[in-house]
Image (cartoon, rainbow, N blue to C red; front, side):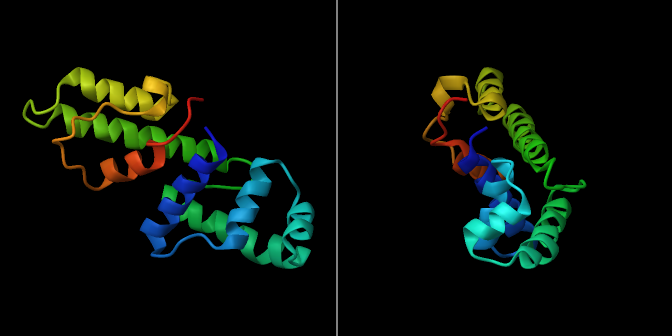
Length: 151
């Protein structure tokens, strides 16, 4: 999964749970963590003190994500947690599509779910019939993955 996709999912989780978007520093911490940087390196590159990044913003960020994802999230495991959330969205969408009184065929739902999980289906784009109005988790998933390059 690409960096921008992880950031989009993290922002959506924080936004839906706490009504705000990630701050610039929180995004820098996520980017640095993805690049396996230490808090010291992140602080130095972002112009903040090490203690502010390591003792204030970093731990609060992992707490926010933990609450939003309903699992313990840390600097070392957040990628896996965000990927699981993307997979859950795909599974939920497949269930909703397959139970929609035949409006969407099972094959379309399976293709959509496959695309969400691995982003391999149709080079990361989804074949959703244009007559469908998407809401909630479906909209979120499409926002996250609509322009995603193949993994």
